[in-house]
Length: 355
Ligand code: FES
Image (cartoon, rainbow, N blue to C red; front, side, top):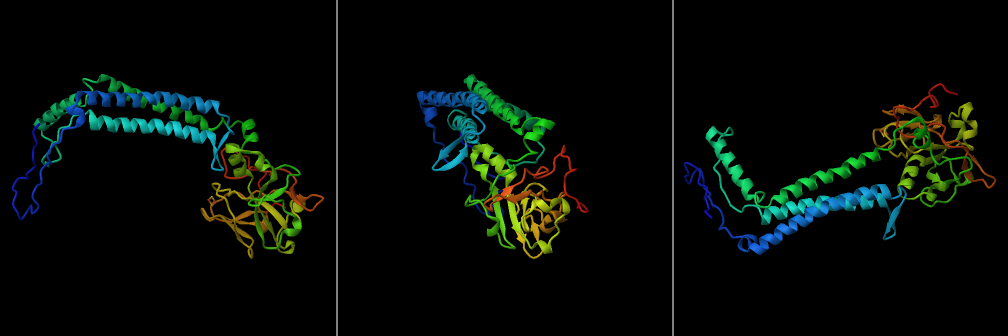
């Protein structure tokens, strides 16, 4: 095999002080030197590409077979089983295609080393003809001429790997009919009598424990009955903040007098702009600031927006106390929590002037 070295035209020491090192001595690959090794590499590439359709089928089967709320426990940490296993099979299939291509390029494709001079961007017609001839030669050297199966296997693997991607479109959720919305984004697991518990300790919260100016992140006590993806979905919707303010320094509308306990009020923790969790609380002004785009809500005035891009007041959860003095919900939220969506009915939202 010939080795061409590159020497720019007009070379002189002033213009090209570093001598052209040329191409290193060519070392023949083991797969070229040994026909058996070449055939072995060919089979290895085929095996890797052949495993891809199998993994793609397992991916699709798992997608439909795994219950939505299943989870795997790894070193005491809960992972959503669907995400874990789909990631494993889809990732492995993609990895195998990559490894097979690299192995093919390193062991089977032509091994000729070439140096080319730089030239003007637009190629003259003769150069294009040379390119076409070189391309045909390259295609021949890629092994596709002799090893036709690799081309077919690679094309098939790339085609099949698209199937999981198409199947994942189903994760965009069910069609949001009115009935589906009522059961999903328009409801949370809050209900009459559900205790408010501390987000970290999971302990129920007594009204008498709350001090003026205090903010507590909380969850419904029944949240831990849910697992896996279901747990994440319910937590995302039902997270709340509880604040206690001096009742004489805040506005409590007539319609919400029985939604609070002595100045203890409870709001959704999810910003009504695009859904960031909020708890930046300014005691003096009673303002709650969202760190994402600076929407600011006045918790001393029914969660109305006083600044920023949020278009709706923060939903308030009606609360009371049980016989032991623990804070409990009076009902679910009266309006959907979180960001707006097309079909959302905003009639129930608290607005400036509502009393
Ligand atoms: S998500 Fe809160 S301001 Fe944008």
